[in-house]
Length: 257
Image (tube, rainbow, N blue to C red; front, side, top):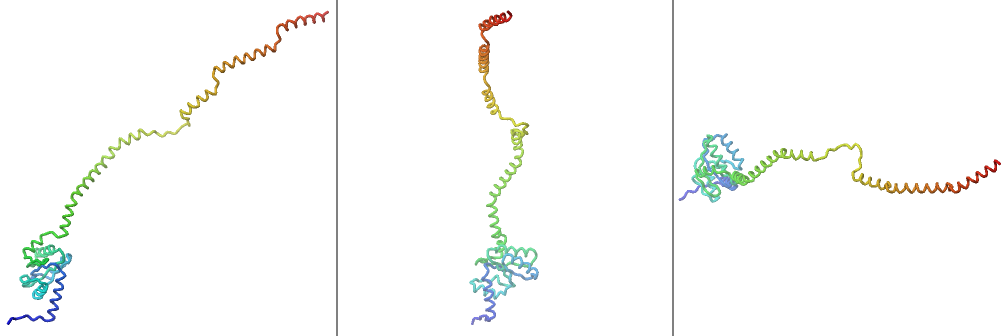
């Protein structure tokens, strides 16, 4: 006759609650926590909480039945005092690292094995997993590798720009001096002088207004000629003067007589 363990309704509810809790997580690391202080367990839980994980002490029999209902056979890991690190997502390596780190710091914690993404891991495999970089670290390393050529190019361009800025004032100084030498000095005009073109235009105009010397010479003889005939016409001819003289003399003699 086979002996069957009787499960009370209270135990069934406890197993169901534990199963529902396990169903929310993707990985499990089993550890022996005997000898750990409350302070050490609290410190570990705070560290795991940052990675969306938790550290839970369980009853082996209830945990074994809960995993059985999830189609996982866990036997060797659930022997002796057991605590399970419950893991969400892809942070199993970081959670394993925290477990091994606290053990190195002196806490009496011993990793038994793990059940991660449906696969069983031995204690040695979990330790090897703890040494791998996390997903975020891998992404950061990949981004750094991709950014390296761009950063190098940016650094080269920045150095070249700084070099040009440093050489700029020295190269521009002669050009600035030449520009100043070419620029005419702004002087205050003492008198408003007409442009040379206007002066040249005025001089021919003045010369045209004045009569040429030839005209002046031509005018002078004409005036002299016009004056002389008029004077000659006004004067009596010599014959008249001669005729007048004998007549005057005769008249004078007649009067004397």
